Image (cartoon, rainbow over all chains, first blue to last red; front, side, top):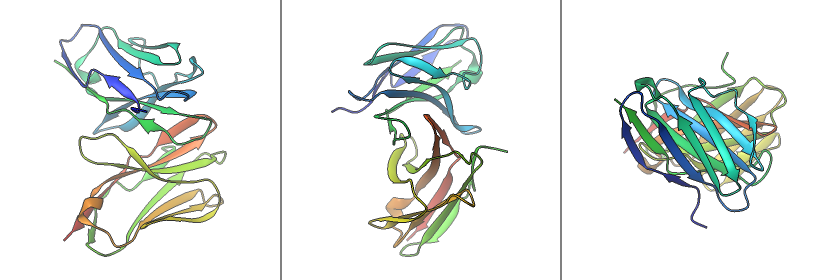
Length: 113
Length: 109
């Protein structure tokens, strides 16, 4: 298996633009997590899905952030409109079952200017 | 109080010595505990996990869990310069995985 795949690896966009980050979890994994990592706040859980259903989105910072998982092999995290303070590395991770170890993608480094 | 707390470091360790990392958590319902290593500019990678009280050893790594004290630790024996990284403690309560802020470890030759 290729592991968790994220795209793009790097994204630079202007403030106010819409940004969409993509994630393909490991096949057979029932859980998918979106994290954001910054120097100041460390690794923060934004939202996670179980069997494509959003379970906990309490970490989503604002209504500008939204996430979807239309099927077991694909998820998106969208920011609209983007702001400079959204600049961070966004990680997607998946795990096979409840409480199990999570495998991370390579991350998307987002820069909003 | 943060849900998962770690000393940010840096923890400076001479090559060949033991590095000892600590982590405390607030949710008594937590069931699974993980240690991830993250090199600068890279994604976190799992190095250890532990579910039961006591010690678990894997190569040069030993994880220790004390649920009564809500405390989990990681020992790295015979530290190598390649162990220099940030070590993240992660705690699973139900389906949710929460990370600590990480401890930066520097192994000096």
